[in-house]
Length: 131
Image 1: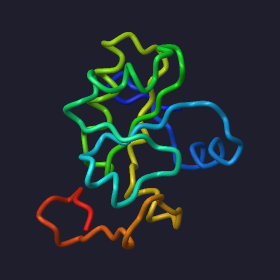
Image 2: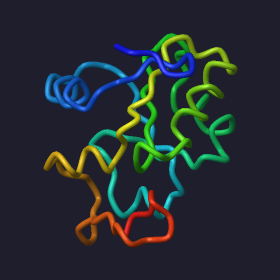
Image 3: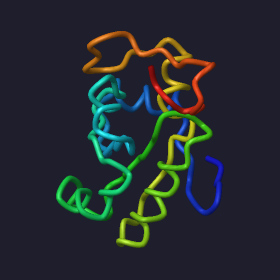
């Protein structure tokens, strides 16, 4: 487990392994709600980036529970920023899946709640945008 800016990282293979075994942890997508609705990692809860402090205490009451945050892609800072915010709120076991949805999809893993397939558009003006 490597550390980036004081936040432990979670890796895709570990997430998948833990999901398959129904291990307890909270998985939070730190993206706008519309992006979440288009498709998110299995078991993930939606937390818009500007609502972390408002929503997470109700979603994850146990501040010692492992919380893994992610956003759309490795170049998106929403997940790491949310992890730092959660640590400031007293969460003691926070990690970031820095690869995010892009890494998940690129490795052939499915998203939930998709109305249409999620495809990352390489020509999009925002490198982390989902089309």
